[in-house]
Length: 418
Image (cartoon, rainbow, N blue to C red; front, top):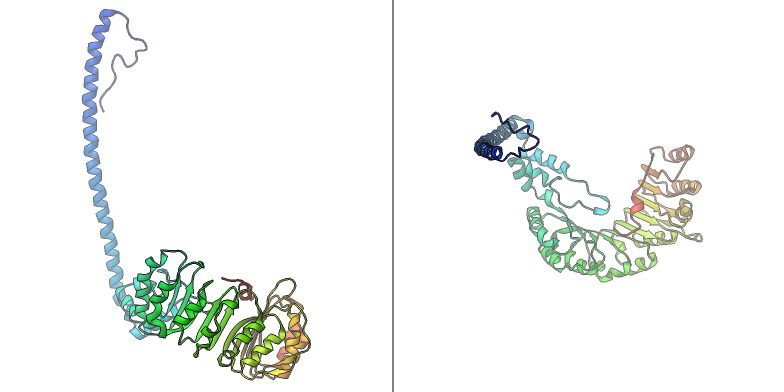
């Protein structure tokens, strides 16, 4: 480190003597020249040091990459001796199926994501990718979501690749769009080659329902529609679905009798239905129109007490779910008493109910006694508020019955358009 001290370093005021000033100017000029030379040398040394530091940094990066490659090689070779690597393809395929996301209520699917199977499985190793891509059953569920114009063009390549891997397997599709104005013609044109493969369809689109059904669904077995009004659903579009067995129409409460009458000839071939009702006799009307039902989910919205209903027995219904929607004081399960008094279900195996108290205990107990059904499971929402003594009376009627209580939150989200 050079010594930069000079006789002038500590000077506070310059000398005003003329001869002395001339001498000092020459001396100070020499000092400045020396300092400039020293600065040049320092800058040169800094440049050399930065060159060395860059070389060290490059060397470090090379060593980090080398470390990562070594780790990858270790994992790769460990894989050759691991149990997972040695699993037969058939066993690995079963494992992959258990990795798939669960299908949500009413066939709602997750949009494709690299953080979930099956895409996640293709990124683990080469063998897993080969096995996953060669399994059509992993690629038979697809949710197509379009939120804004231009998004479809970016997604179409991935959707094409996905459906190509399904190789003709029965498809479960979900069409989602929040935009009423979006033109679905291009998307439906893309799906048209797969029209005979679609077994299940869930629609969350405010408009174009009739158009979609006419184009896509000649072999449809399950249909779920989230709609603002049933008037937007074409009767002819539903009637032509000769293979339809499950129908779920969800959204704001609408006139049930109109829906039942419009689709009068459809109900007879259905085995699984979800519907909103506003009167107890509408539920009985549905059961009369649909003698082959094995499962029904009813969202009840009864504002007024009805008169006594004509007794009715449905011999095939095995699963009944009732959700009493809470709105303007109409969510009480007590309003189900008329339905319990009239209905007999001799083949019922599962019953699930949710709604506000009071619970029509005596009516329900009479319903069980009259039905003489092989009921296995009774699921009561926590808001029903049955007492242990009441539950024990149900078990006394059906000794094999299992009664459980849980928070049934599914009904809360179905009264509005998704």
